[in-house]
Image (cartoon, rainbow, N blue to C red):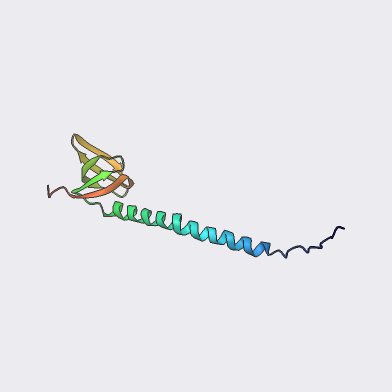
Length: 101
């Protein structure tokens, strides 16, 4: 004899749990990726603004030089052989004063 069990479908909470899941994923993504990237971008911007004539700097491509002139968008670096003009955003690190060496 076969017994037929009548099962009722489970109530679905579908919409709310899905929204909470995606909301939680967004919060984790924000704190792991977006916030640190913004902080690094602000640090690079502050470095670009702080560069002054006479500073020793390293560019993003690895060139070392001394700042000779600064404009709103560019810096002119004195390299071993001559000078070169770079975008301010290309400055990756401030090494110190060129006058101190």
